[in-house]
Structure formats: structure tokens, C-alpha cells
Image 1 (cartoon, each protein chain N blue to C red):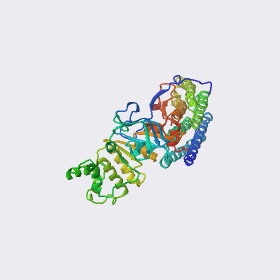
Image 2 (cartoon, rainbow over the protein chains, first blue to last red):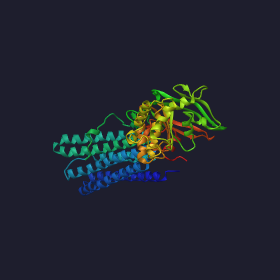
Image 3 (cartoon, rainbow over the protein chains, first blue to last red):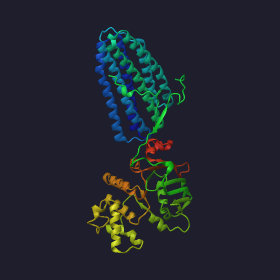
Image 4 (spheres, chains in turn yellow, orange):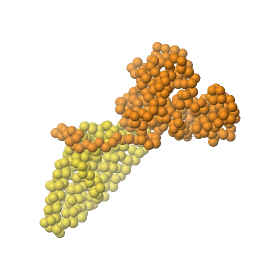
Length: 230
Length: 290
């Protein structure tokens, strides 16, 4: 086995990606918990800690650029590093979604508003599960599994629609809650986008394995232009 | 995971496009639609005495493109390259089976003028090897050999060739100085000018920059991009990054179980270096060979 230096560096970068992924899972769960508890203090902490995610993202990006410049990776190695650059960015944006949810908690304050907590918790659980599976298949470069994960998005989308209708119904019933209801729609939206970005990770897994850039969308809707997350 | 077993269509895979990266200008060459094949090997075997050095090589060289031949030491790259202008004829007991075509003409067929083949298929070697004569006479050597003796015509050949090899501006005031007196990089470009002076179709380059410093190396590489507008270039190089930088097509060779050189994979250079189809190519270009 030659190229041990390159292989070691790639393994270290993969480990860092997994670490970044677990940071995203954790901050997302914290943000949902903060929403459930209406915990303003915890929300401020989540917003503050987002910088750690950003730093980790840039550290990974920097390590890859150095590796490309110094080790001249080719073929599979090159595809892997290019894919990690993309996944690195996806994960960072997922972190922004959790930060966006924490901001919502602060906006809501202690206002009386009906939160579809069951749908939100279920969405978070399923979206995080998708992220977890997507990162697992990404690191193990298992394209066959990567093809299957997008199917899970249908459940997240169904919960999004259900939660959305509950919030809109509440707004119609009590127009004074429209501002707050709007924030809650952003929470739903952020979780829905989190799941979409997990699918993007699956696309990169396929790219590493086959060299082909595919779109593994479950439907034709592309709401990326509408995304914000913060 | 197993409860989900959708087909690709069920989950709505939409194939976008293959990653297409190009090292040269415009689109990478289309392998299925080669515009013009300049040289071609057909079921080529090559022997040094009883030793089979090349086995069943089928390779097409496209006109006015750069084809790189890469592979580990001893895989037959240089043997194949030297076959393209019958330089191997000089090796005792060397023997060819199969064909090497130049514009559909078998260059090993009986009655073929070897000198004419070597004029049409020039060669640049690893180490610059200018003749021990002036810069002018180095370039004029070939044309003189072909009977051109008129001073003004020879001067035209010399200037044109030196301009084509991007050396003219550096040597135009010292054409009567020895070809050995200039730098290594300049000497190599002088050798390229010498090859160009006999107006070849194809230029073979055997590790043309391996003895040069990095700046001279890049000058040679830039020069190749200019030359390919008019000439077909085949380059053998150990430097994979160089092959990736300069070539349009890449051929990867290895030795088979009988230690004969074989062609493992041939493809567009971007494809070979980003997504090779063969596992051995993958191992070689990622540096994990052996």
C-alpha cells in the first residue's frame, strides 16, 4: 500500500466530517428541545455555538485544499475530496437551520401560540435519522444504500404538510397569532430542508462510487430558491 | 434499510450529466467519434528476440491531439513509442507482428522507406541531444539531408522551426553559437525545432521534460499546446500530473502475467484521471499501484 500519507489525511478528514455531522444532529435536537421548553437561554447558546460548526466546516475545507495542492489526488481520491467539499457545505447550512429554529424560540418568547409539537418532533427525528443514514453511507461509500435513503423523505414531507395545515388553521382561527404562526412555518420548513440536504449527501455518495452526478429527488419540487433557514 | 427497495425510477432519479472536465480548450474529445486517426496499432505484438515486450496493442492516435502513454517502468511505453517511427529497427533481433498504420499505410510493410517514415514521424528524447554544431546548423541538418542547400531557403526553415518551438527570440542573435552552449530547456526546444524542420506529421516525445527544471518543463508543455494545432503528438511520461495537464487522450499500460506490455485502458484524459473504468488504472493514477 503506497500513498499512506494521503490515505491517512483522507481518513482524518472523513472523521472530521462525521464529527461535524454529529454536531448538526445534536444542535438540531437541542433546538427542538428549546422550542418545546420555550427555553430562551438554551436558544441563545445554540446561536452562539453555531460558530463552532462554521469553524469546523472551514477547517475541513482548508484541509482539503491543502491536500489537493500538496498531494495531487486523482480519480477516486479526487472525487471523494470534491464530494466532501460539497457535503461540508451542506452540513454547515443544516447547522444554520438549527440556529434559525433557536431564533424562532426567541421570537416566540412566552407568547400563547399553539405549536404542532408532535409533528415537529417527528419531523426532526426523521430528518436527523436521514442525515445519520446519509452520512453513514457517505463515509462507507455505499451507493446502493444511498439510493434508498431519499424514499424516507416522503414521510418528512407528509409531516410538513400536516404541520403546515395545523399552523395555518390556527392562524385563521386567531389572526392575532399570524406573526408567531409564520415563525412556526419556518421551523417546519427548516426541518424539511434538512431532510432535503441529507438527500444531497446521498447524491455525493453516488458520485464518489460511480463518477456520475445524479439528482435523487423524490419529487420535482425544488424550493431551494425559497430557502433561508435563519 | 431493506424494507425500502425502490428501483431507481421509483425514487425519481434524474440523470443530469457526467462530470465533464477538460484540460484543453473547449469540450473534451469524443472517443466514439474520432475525427481523424493519424496513427493506429492493429493487434501489435513486439518481440526482442524470443521475449515478447508488447502484447496485442490496439491503439488509435488522433490527428492534432496529444496522446499520453503512462504506466509503470518496464511496461513497454517507450518500446511502443519507438515502434511508431521504427526506431526499434536499430535493436538487434527486434521483431514486429501486427500493424502500425500511418494514414492507413502499414509502416512495417515491405518496401516502405524507413527514412521517410522517420521524417514524417519525428522524435524528441528524454535528454536534449543537440548535435555538436551551431544552433542554425542543428535545425538545418534535416532539410540539408533532404537535399535543400540554398542558403535563403535553409534560413527560412531555421527561422520558422525556431519560431514554432518558441526559441527564436532567445537565440536569433546567436544562431552561429554552438547548440550545446544554451540552457537545457533551450536545448530541448532546439531539438524540437530540429524535428519540426523536416515538416513531420507526428512528433513522438519520450519523457521530453524529465531532465528539465520546472520553468523549462512548463515552457515545453505550453509549446506542446501550440504544436498540436499543426502536429499530432504522442508523449511518454512518468509524470502523471504532466500527462493530465497536457494531453487530450491517455493510454495506460501495464505488464501482463508474461511480463509483456499490454494496453489496460485508453480514454479521454479527464475521464482517466477522474473516473477510470479499470481497477488497475485507478490504482495507478491514485498512486496505490504495487
